[in-house]
Length: 47
Image (cartoon, rainbow, N blue to C red; front, side, top):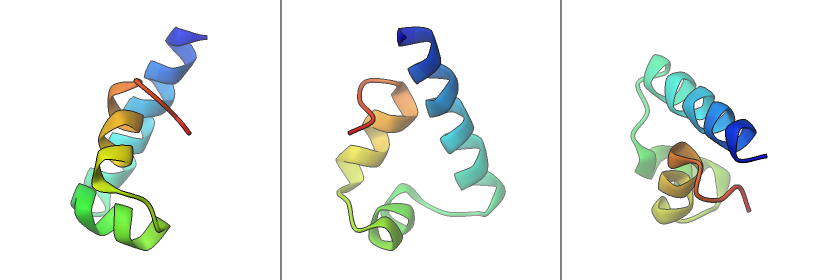
Protein backbone atom coordinates (compact mmCIF):
# COMPACT_ATOMS: atom_id res chain seq x y z
CA UNK A 1 0.00 0.00 0.00
CA UNK A 2 2.73 2.48 0.98
CA UNK A 3 4.66 1.68 -2.19
CA UNK A 4 1.55 2.41 -4.29
CA UNK A 5 1.12 5.80 -2.56
CA UNK A 6 4.72 6.69 -3.35
CA UNK A 7 4.36 5.65 -7.00
CA UNK A 8 1.16 7.68 -7.35
CA UNK A 9 2.78 10.66 -5.62
CA UNK A 10 5.72 10.57 -8.03
CA UNK A 11 3.30 10.40 -10.97
CA UNK A 12 1.38 13.45 -9.69
CA UNK A 13 4.67 15.34 -9.33
CA UNK A 14 5.83 14.34 -12.83
CA UNK A 15 2.58 15.41 -14.45
CA UNK A 16 2.44 18.68 -12.52
CA UNK A 17 5.97 19.58 -13.61
CA UNK A 18 5.36 18.44 -17.19
CA UNK A 19 2.50 20.93 -17.35
CA UNK A 20 4.61 23.66 -15.70
CA UNK A 21 2.25 23.94 -12.76
CA UNK A 22 3.15 24.99 -9.26
CA UNK A 23 1.70 23.17 -6.28
CA UNK A 24 -0.35 26.30 -5.64
CA UNK A 25 -1.82 26.28 -9.17
CA UNK A 26 -2.68 22.56 -8.98
CA UNK A 27 -4.24 23.03 -5.56
CA UNK A 28 -6.36 25.92 -6.81
CA UNK A 29 -7.49 23.97 -9.89
CA UNK A 30 -8.47 20.99 -7.74
CA UNK A 31 -10.00 22.98 -4.88
CA UNK A 32 -7.61 21.66 -2.23
CA UNK A 33 -4.85 23.12 -0.08
CA UNK A 34 -1.22 23.37 -1.13
CA UNK A 35 -0.45 21.12 1.82
CA UNK A 36 -2.67 18.42 0.35
CA UNK A 37 -0.79 18.50 -2.94
CA UNK A 38 2.51 18.33 -1.07
CA UNK A 39 1.33 15.31 0.91
CA UNK A 40 0.15 13.56 -2.26
CA UNK A 41 3.51 14.09 -3.94
CA UNK A 42 5.45 12.76 -0.96
CA UNK A 43 3.13 9.78 -0.55
CA UNK A 44 2.07 10.88 2.94
CA UNK A 45 -1.65 11.04 2.12
CA UNK A 46 -4.03 10.79 -0.80
CA UNK A 47 -7.16 12.03 0.94
